Length: 121
View 1: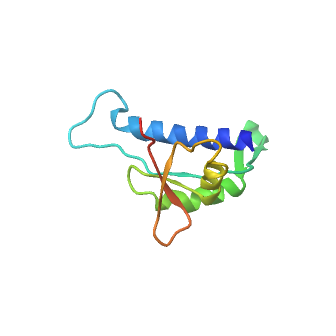
View 2: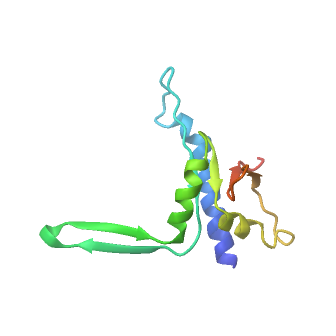
């Protein structure tokens, strides 16, 4: 459980950092152009496979519940938002009385997923 907490927290921290720095990507800002992201986060066991070998061509294939969660969460995120799946939120908020969750979750209307907000600095 501790490893799950650490992994989920690291993933969400990474998303928050990327969201906070994406506008300054590349060093110079082009006038009238604003780069934003919308991110979906899932959690679970992922299967990675390497396929191929014919003509020395190789492909990687990833499958598993986290990708299914991301395909639901990512389209729900608006520009500049990170949406987490219920499994991510459950991991980060369980036992929250013993260890404080540094993230704030805002429920989406009529959806199981929630928006992750940047932690207070």
